[in-house]
Amino acid sequence: MASILSENAADPIDALLSAHGLRRTHAARRVLGWLLAHPDTSYTHAQLQVALAGEGDASDSAGLDRVTLYRLIDRLTQVGLLLCRVDASRVRRYQAMPAGVHAMPHFECQSCHRDSPLEGALQANAGDLERAAQSAIDALKALGYQGMSLDFAVRGVCADCATGSTGGHHRRGTAA
Image (tube, rainbow, N blue to C red; front, side):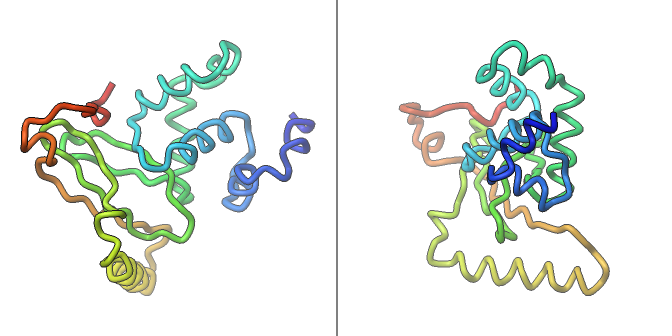
C-alpha cells in the first residue's frame, strides 16, 4: 500500500483526500474520482455502486462492498468533498462538491425525478446566490456551527415532462 500512495503523491485526488484528513485508499480515490469526473450528476448509493462496478475489474469491485461504500460516502460528505441532498422521495443523492462553492442550485422534476443543475440558468444571479449562501454560512459559523454547505433545491415539473417530450429524456433520478 505504501508504494501505491507514493506513486500517486502528485495526484490531485490524493491531494484533496490528504487536505481533508482522509486516507488515500484505492476505494477513496476511485469513488471521489468517479464523482469528480461526473460533476453535473448526483447518484444514489445504489447507482454509484452499479456505476463503479461497471467501470472496474473484478478485483476492484471486491474491495468496495455496499457497507464500505456507505462509510466512504459518509466520510467524504462529512469533510465537504461531497454534497448529500435528500430528494422529495427522501432518497439521498451524492454529488462532488466543487471547491469554494457554498450553494449548488438544482432542479428536481417531480414527474421524471431528473435532477438538473441550475448554475447555467442562474448565471446572472449566481453571484447573489453565492453571497447569500456565504452570509448564511457566516452567521451560522458565528453561532458555532461547522462544516456547512447549502442545498438550494427547486422542485416542480421540467420542460420535457410539461410538454410531453421524451426525446433524449432519461430517468437518472430514480433510485436503483
